Image 1 (cartoon, rainbow, N blue to C red):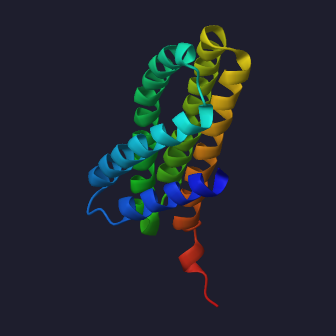
Image 2: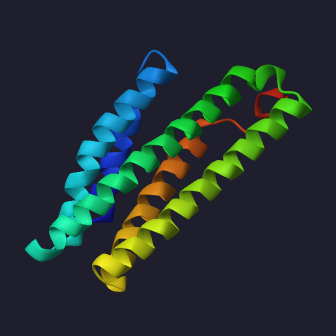
Length: 158
């Protein structure tokens, strides 16, 4: 399962990175990732017919907010890329604060969704979903981290 998920996310980021501007990246990432992810989640969750309706309603609500959080993350990465060469204390502080707020927003969303799913389905099914989402989130963060230079990385002289 992990290899399939990793492959899917890598393909999606490759497509997104080829886009011409940040808005295109967001559209491609959200469009492709949203569609592929739903199939992966469906296979992974193995829901009964009775669970399915409740789950997908909560999932769809979750995805709307997750995509908004993802868009903010991409905007923050674009700001970092644009200002990287001339990064000031103020801009660096703004970027880090935005990144931390973004991470917090994602955690709050997961907590809220877990509570809803635990009540509607079961804590076990809710935990299963959150575990999958954490896996996706970690893959995304890793992919972004590998593509972004560290502050001062290109200033070093070997």
